[in-house]
Length: 492
Image 1: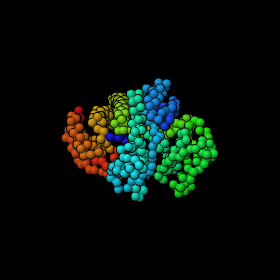
Image 2 (image 1 turned 90 degrees about the vertical axis):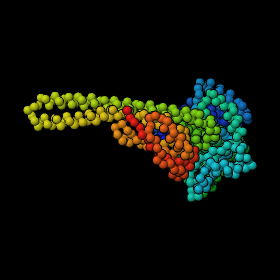
Image 3 (image 1 turned 30 degrees about the vertical axis):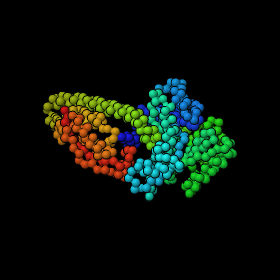
Image 4 (image 1 turned 60 degrees about the vertical axis):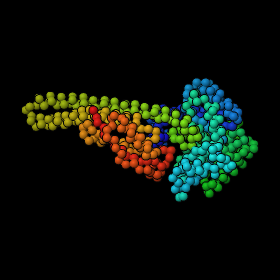
């Protein structure tokens, strides 16, 4: 299962899981750029929406590479040693890729199968087995679902994975960093990356398909770059069939070209912000910062080119870390509730004793005595209620704990309902999604094998298409099985 960033609605669980720093390794044809990045928000900022995305680059370096990437292993090792970094969560950036916006028919049932069967149309002269692809849903119109798609040669991925010291890093993903601009509902954003004599651009708008492209830069002069940027501005206007201004520009360039590229961009794109929020980020690390901002906010696997067998190793570790922290937080909450209950119990006992003493000394005043007796009875009822609450405070903790241990990586729960039948019997109803009916059956078997649950029964299980699945459930396929189970739990 791929745990959704909306596991709790809009929860920023990378922060809760302790993922505050990430090593971004941006690999170009002839160099590699390292950026060890930390997020700056406090632990109280748990929402993705509330995080302003401020980042700090703790360490930065550039190294030369050969075309075969054989020096990548030594460069990563050297950077980690120089900066005394141990086993960092690491994301690799790849810059030799093709990307395009692809319309998929709205009635397509299996999106991944559609991409596999039509991949050759996106690769002129290429074979399906020569490429790895990933895609991300952008928006839907009347007839199609539009996806951003990225393709990378398999031989390049293999060379990259071969030269990464997997014993020194926790490899989380391989991405095309420039594709991770997080545009809001009104802003048009443009990324421009200059490396050597190559320019890559990526434009995203809330109302238009994303589009990207490459141009060859004959000379790195301000005059030439102005003309190049003017042509790019015309492409954006043509794509949108309007004269919309670009609100935010993110510019990444080699150190020797950074100043003239910024002057040329400001000349052409007047009124646009430049590297908004990344003022302290080195110029050649802007693409890394864009990707880090996204990854540190949510750990989805969209456009991740890392083979699944590598990806799940550290993703599952992060999720286990998150589960441990949530259990610890739950324990702290229970402890605080216990403290409040005991404090209230102590206060009510003291009040009851005080009322008893007053009642004994006012035997001649019957009306006041009746009033005090009424107050005393009220306080004692409250005391009995608190004692009952205290006795039930740990009643449901074993249920939640066992469910978190049983659930597998092919099942997702959306609701857990607990209903008391008697003083000792509780009925548990579990609602969720699974990839297949077999996965539902495996989950039922796991519940039955756990001695804490009795009378496990399947109420219903139906196949659901993508439109029925809530948006907060992020699964790697849109056709799932929705199920409802019930079981009994006998409390002590």
